[in-house]
Image (tube, rainbow, N blue to C red; front, side, top):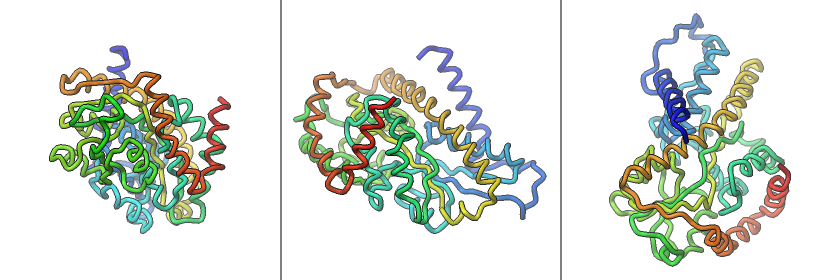
Length: 343
């Protein structure tokens, strides 16, 4: 990551944060009456400086400009409006109109969305996008049709790594270690069972304190989340494994969406498509920058899995795939593998 790219990314981040006003929004200067304005609440649980946080604010800024102030998307980051685990209920009740939870969170009600939780399914971001944009991704989005929530797109975070308060150099080191897992995904729990670890489901806003206080000893997350939430300050060991992928489903309340004027829906769709492409680029850059910052902090010891170790881990994780097929995921997994084979 060269210096110019770091500077550019920093400028983008500062610009978006200064223009966001997430908790204290500036008065709207557009000449739009109160009755004409459409207010959309967008809640998410991560920091403003993460790929999701930056994309949410860019989306809000773009829509405001393109609608001449007619639509105001109010972004609430870092669980300031609804906490992890509360968002889905709030969306169903139209108390918030857009959320962007991890795809694993949909697994409780729509188990096949756990496709993205399968360990070592993807080797790089390009493969992830082939599935997101391919037939498998469309199948997942179509699963939500007819429900109170609608999927508009899927955003990136990145590949997950392990952090811990104990060294995790070998597979045997995972035995008995308490790992925080996202509530909702049985596949993530199965993944850790294959490593003989103990799983503790916790909402995202609870993770830092749980790690600090020893309620759990380890977790999995992307560098951008590990850095922005300061997990590395209470987790001195980092395993670069790229074992799983973390993405976000951008969801909207269906009744609210269908009640919007057609021209507004079109602007939202077009803007979101543009932001999604931008967000994918930012996610890669941000994770690289944050990983570098974590390494240079002097607070963590870093190991990286070798290719041979990854092959071994893949073999150990095969029961996770069998569980996915058992819950009806065979056809979806086959479609995803076809997407992977067709660049």
